[in-house]
Image (cartoon, rainbow, N blue to C red; front, side, top):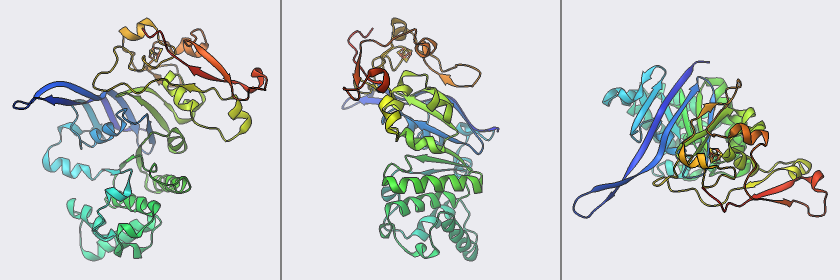
Length: 364
Ligand code: SF4
């Protein structure tokens, strides 16, 4: 598959201003700080990370809803950052966004018909009443809503149905890429699966490409061909979906995965849990060297001095940004101060496994 999107060393830095009379820039928030990735045509790229890691800013930077500070974005061979005015407006039709909260992203005063027609008008696709009606009905049908929904208002629908309207609003313009920012996190768990399945079905029938942004690894697992893990503005690991779950290399990915419950009591008891201590550092004042070093149970002196590159780990193509990924994987490097706690204290540790609680007292 060829790459539909190429992002190279993308940075989005927001200035911090201060001063009453004169606005002085006193620093920057490094929301996205040098991300490079590719999204292949027809695939789903899942981008995960904690809230505040820069994943949503990256999605908005890709559409230039937020102007990137530097770096390159290529979409189907077009240099996106060079587009201006009318070119940019026409180009935007090809990339559409689905937002997290359908209630706040849909204007409550507009009927569904008005919401869908608005986009068609803005992009010059309003080509006669009969054609538009046909297009609206077939779009609603593709997201599982009846034609009668056209005359209703957002508040008349359930959360899941509202998200279907949000997806229809993106689809009606015939996009090639959909950036879905936390598309199911505002929905009940039972509805989440329906919306995820709908996205999968639409991809199959329409050949869509997705960038799915989520904080929940369990959500992206089911639909992603490739998964990228972000931490404090940087991509720290990237792998094929299954590969990442079977062999997480970066300590942060391991910690994220260790927090996902496994619905099998035997496996659940053996699960290694790595509890990260401390909060995500401020993106306005990121740690030197490796951004993850203040929370990393394996950090060494080198981690404070040198920022690790996102490098290819082996022939599988898995990429990781850690100086010591090989040593951590082989067990040659052990985590600092590990206190092993049994999930079931009466059981034999060899049989039930242990919970790792990592505390850091000796940060370099
Ligand atoms: S480079 Fe160092 S601090 Fe960063 S993840 Fe690897 S071991 Fe941890």
